[in-house]
Image (cartoon, rainbow, N blue to C red):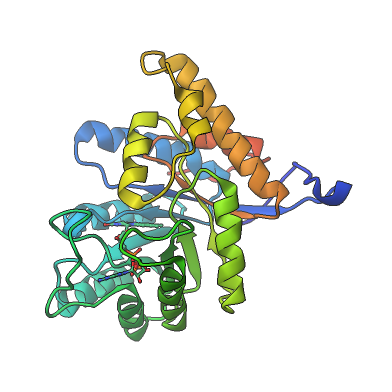
Length: 304
Ligand code: FAD
C-alpha cells in the first residue's frame, strides 16, 4: 500500500503531491528488554504501512538464528512484509543456500544481500570463505538461482572504505544489478549533495534500479559519528556544531535530532526523492515524527 502524502513539493513553484514509500530497518534483539523495545517500535511504526521492514544480519553471521526468529515473528504476527539481510561471511555456499531455502519455505520473499565485513572487524582486508560466495554480486546470483525472490543490495554515495574509487563501487553495484538485484539502499549520509552526485554517476552508467537513500536519524551523535568513521560516511562540521555541548542534555538533543532529520528528508523530497529507508536503531519516536512530517498517517493496519 502506498501513501499519498499531504506535503506538496515546491519544484519550480508547482505544487506536486509525490507518492512516498518508506521502509524501516531493525536489528535482532539480544536481551528481553531489547526485544520489548523492538516490538514496541514495530507496533508503533506498522500503521504507517512501510513497503517492507528489514532485519539485519550480525557481523560474521553472528545473529543467524536471531535474525531468522525476528523475521519469522514479523511474518507470523504482523501484516508487514519482512526482508532478511544476509551476508557471505564465514559460511560456505551450501550453508548460505540453506538459510535462503529456510527463508523461502517460511514465506520470506525479499533478501537484502551483502558481502559483509571480515569476522576480525572493519579495517582488516576481506577474504572470502574458501567455499563461500566471493562477494555480494556472487550472492545475489546464488539467491536468484534458488528462488525468484526480491533482492536488494547496498550502495555507497561516499564510497565504500575498501573500494579504491566511487567508480569501482559503481562497477560492483552494476554487477549486483546484472545478477538480479532490483533495489539498492544507500549507506547513510548527512549531506544530500553526496547522494545526488552519486545518483548522477549511477544513472550515467545505465543502472536504472531505485537507489533508495538510507536515513540515519541521529539519536545519539557520538554513536552516529563512530558508525560514520567505520563506514566511510562523512560528518559535516555543521552537524557536529548542532549537537555541540548537548552531551548531557537529552531533551534538547532530541529536538535537534528531529530538526536535523526533517531538514534532510524534506530537502530530498523537494529534490524529487520518493523512497526512504530508515535505520531505526529499533526506536520508533523520531522515525515516526519524520514520517508524520512527510505527510504519512497511520492506517488501520496494526502490527498484531
Ligand atoms: P559490496 O557491495 O560487495 O562491496 C562494496 C565495495 O567494496 C565495492 O566497491 C567493492 O568493489 C569493494 N570491495 C568488495 N570486496 C572487496 C575486496 N575484497 N577488495 C577491494 N574492494 C572490495 N553488514 C552486516 O554485517 N549485516 C547487515 O545486515 C548489513 N546490512 C547493511 C545494509 C545496508 C543498506 C548497507 C549499506 C550496509 C549493510 N551492512 C551490513 C554493511 C556491509 O556488510 C559492509 O559495508 C560490507 O563491508 C560490504 O558489504 P556490501 O555488500 O555492501 O559490499
